[in-house]
Image 1 (spheres, rainbow, N blue to C red):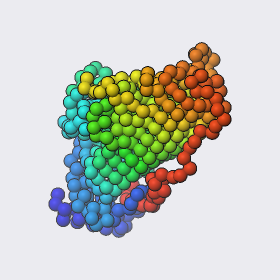
Image 2 (spheres, helix red, strand yellow):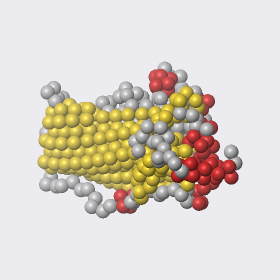
Image 3 (cartoon, rainbow, N blue to C red):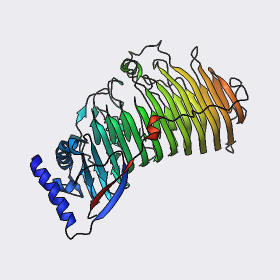
Image 4 (cartoon, rainbow, N blue to C red):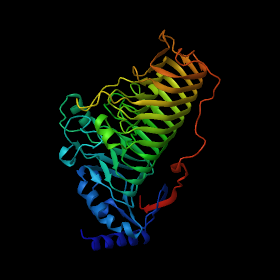
Length: 460
């Protein structure tokens, strides 16, 4: 379809909706509103859950991309089940998924093109080779919005989980949403289900808002992390709920020598009003791939239910870099294995070429105002021999133990810091000091970004 034809389609659709048909208007918050609008059916989309819509998505976005300089465009995914393979987004663009729409990931691998490995990782996470393009993908974009009024994106991940468990993968599984080398990114007001692997992966990007997501995966599904900001700056994650087979949030920045060479940290990250259920993983993990560094993470008003751990630091010799200036407050936990968990021997290297002298710096880790109930271990804090984790501060914490708790509640090695008003009593390496652990009083720039009220209209 030529662009001139597409312009006619947009105009005709607008006229049709304006004459004699009852239209509904849906308002939604977005970074920017768009001058132009189209519906997937304008490009031959079929909502039967069986017909592939990959070509329809690609044609729609290719045409709408030409409107970027003229106020941008939005593509509406209307009610129905829309089967598709991978497709790539464009700048100054909004993908809007209606509440009665379900985007379904195809189970045909030919619908998922292959990409090179990420330069900060050096190999795929599942296999040494390349990786499958994410279901919704974008690279080198500015001002891109993926949103809806709680529409659903279902990756139909069971096909991929089975291949992973049977060790039949030669490339890394696709993610549900991945945005690379981009800025001004919004992902919001959606339900994400059954991702083949990670759900939301902003990488090498900045100025990101992720909010009002419901992310659902079976708790035994492999590597279905919720939200993984990776070598990103100025990111806001808020008002979201994750049930996962892996970490609900995993903050990353590259793997061993590849991450050290790429040298792009994740920094200036705020996480707030967030709820996690993950029986075998962390509410928020920092690492283990943190070889570009992680700095200035602020997490507050966090709830964890039936989850393995709270805010966990994962690292190892060979990672290098740092995790520092981490601040956590107002966290509520129920049915938890470890309230505090730091691991300096996580292992898992991309190849034997890592530097055995690349020691990570873990410093300035602050927790305050935490309540936990039905807890097995209060803390397992394992630094690295001759490379201790330092400046740990824990204050105002009340931990109620399970009926059969572990006898050693605080297991501490190679760590240094202080505590105050912590029950049960911490280990000797964290002596009591009259202190209120810090939390920054300034605001990150991303916290002051205001969303506009935008709209879509149609006969929905």
